[in-house]
Length: 458
Image (cartoon, rainbow, N blue to C red; front, side, top):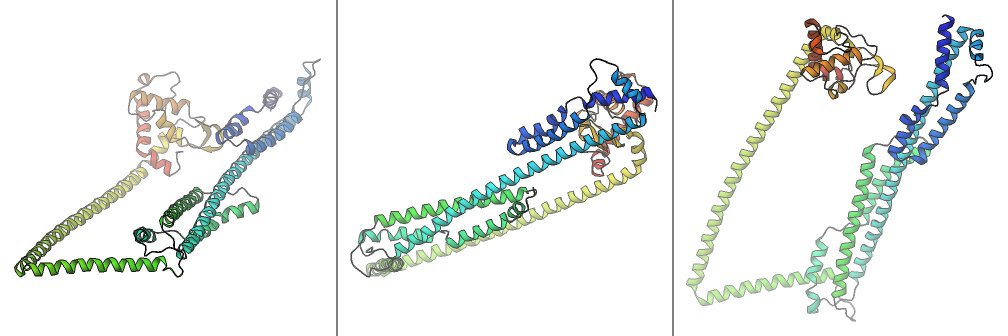
């Protein structure tokens, strides 16, 4: 390497290390910090990165002598060129390590914040379950007090409340055991969080875990609301009932069974009385009533038979429709499989042509149209071609496709695509235009398949 080349690279290196690393803050940390509102967590990682970068920056920066502006040039001339090249390479490797460490610190901070959010959700779920358990315990106590309450259920005004008691007891009211089941589910869900907190590592938290915790909290709140409603209904019944000073009052459940038996007996007595009156009035009338009843019964049976027949017909039609739908789904799946097999077969046949015409997109390179220069060499992203309109079957789409392939694909080889610098599509020769048309059609046909095969980025 000649001395002028060494001087030129050294000057470029000196300019780079004396420029503050603003890009790292703007694109790496500050943008993520504002996006997730993580000041309390990410700021620690940012400050650590700034400290390391600052030490490196000020340790390497060389301030020229203000008295002699040519001091740097003489110093470079006296330095061994191979030493300067090695120093440049070492500086670049050091800067890459700093960037990698900053990214790692950012990921750790985000994972810790995520873990903290899920932990808070778990604590809120535990609080909701505890409140629900208190309500369940209070409900159990209320029922015990209700069973031993001095209420005279033989009192006519209290007997009207027995129907409300019957309705309340028929409802599904959560008990302490049901709430304990929620506690067991909560312990199972928070076990991974506890292990992560005990280890001190920023373990990733799945979205399923957070949604399960939120669902558990919602269930606890619904159970608490149901318990409060049932307790209010019981309190209303007790508050409306007239108490008695007598001892050995019947329990509510016993009084309720007695009430039901009395209602059934009264109903039977009314039916028997009606039948007796009918017999006394006229045997003929009774016979007519019986005949009408039998006719009504026969008509009901006929209607029921018609209904059952209609239901069977509708069920048969529904089953046939479902079978047809299943057949269509199976046919569609078979067609998709056949189309896929055909596409794979045609892709293999066109693979040499694809590799020839699409070198500007398939060849891995450090240039990314959205991210700029990348460390890893990657193929061109398919989605960028779509968003730029380069896959549209129009003159403008062909022209955009050709410009991207020849001018915006980085150092990737163009292959048969002509250089379209300041050239419109209509100014190309027939063969040049045909090369662009073929290349565009290949990506339109096999683009998504090449993304699956990782020949193109998504």
